[in-house]
Amino acid sequence: MIFRRSSLPFLFAAATASLLISCSDAEIGPSDVPVITQAIYVVPENYYDEPYKKYVSSENFYVNINQKIKICGIYTADKDTLPIDLSAPYYSSHRWTIDDREAFASVVYYSFDKAGVHKVTFETIDKLGDTLVSHANIYVNTPTTISLQSPPNHYNQVDGINANGLELSWKIYGIDPWETSQCYIYASYFRDSLWVSPLGAVKCNNSVSLLDTLNMKVSNGTDKPSTKTNDFGDTLYYGFENSTIYWGVHAVIKNGKGDREHVFSDVYSFSTKLQNDGNAIVEVPVACRFNQYPEKSRLVGAIISSAGDTLSKISGIKGNATIRKTLDPQSNVKIVVCDSVRTEYGCSSMTVNLAPSTKTITDTLFLQDKVKPSIVPAATELSRDDRIKFLILDNGSGVNASRITALLNNDTVNVYSYFEDYTLTIPNICKKNCELKIYAEDYANNKAPDVYWRITNEKETTFITGPFSKTEGSK
Picture 1 (cartoon, helix red, strand yellow):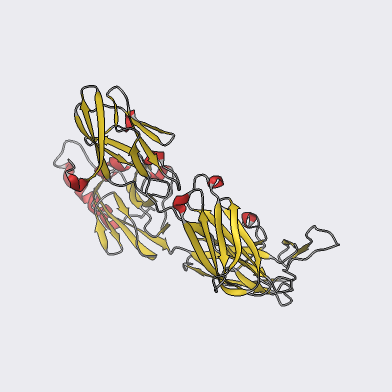
Picture 2 (tube, helix red, strand yellow; picture 1 turned 90 degrees about the vertical axis):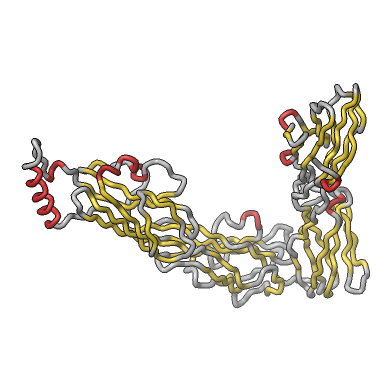
């Protein structure tokens, strides 16, 4: 950004030069003082090269709330752009004003914790006493979020015939006055491919309707699903019982510079009513959280009525599976699932209501590993020439080898240690009496007990005693 000096400073500079003629052997005139201009740049905080090499100056910049940036003042002397660290000889002083705050450096590190338009002024006094002023606006974007409204997640009372259309509605928050937005609508019978292609685009403050038949049906007397295209041109697939449709919204927000922000909603689902004699279907996704080997889990459990009767038993299911049962419609049905192999996961349960002729898809029922790993010495008496071995056991999410630390008298020995087949092997570098601490975690972030062992070397034998808590005289 270039600002022209007024004529008055030039006259003053010329008068100053004429006085210098009588006091110096060399004539110094205004032409000997480089003409400088200035510009404002805004770059990411971690960008360390000269801003003008990759970015451009502007009067308008767009950043996010709490985004760390560098606001830079860049000078040009006689049309040559100056590196920041070489520009000091060309000016007398400079000052930043950001909103109501002042700073006096060439580069200001900053972040804005409030959305809106923030004013920036960069003022420089050059070697001739002239004042250069540059202004910029920094537009701080409000974080954008999308909240799906209707139908509510897992709603299962949708009319499969859908003669009047099914409205999909949402709310979008955080569109600033300097931004424009467009929303793309996605719907699919297959969750994994939901975001592959949109049904269509609308203004973000609108809603849309899915038209035509939504429930599943058999066509042409075959066991293959039939297809039909809805009003967006998307091909819908029909099966036998009903439809479960997944949907979501993708918003594209564009600022005044043309930069785009992409925001996705959560994924919601809804189901049409079953075309049957009134029974209900329940589907329960089950997962053991942070389980490294879900195929080794075996889930068992039961579905229990509000009166305490067992409606159905669950057995032989691997971890990260879906339990699917057809039951009589009823309320307060309890679903209990346990891991019979990875016992540290214990059991988890939920309660659901089953309406007639509906399929209920629940949220994932997570089994949680809340048990700490256990640490025990493989042997408490061994030869001094042998390595020290400890078993680190966890029958849940599993031991996280990257989170194991061994200390002898508070000095790490991990560089000489290794963990394999549940066994931590440590070199016996203790000279006589040492304190050994082992820190370990499982993948569920459960930490092993904070204890220590005593290592005692006597002649040719090493003894390991403990564990001891720190309140028992830890060093």
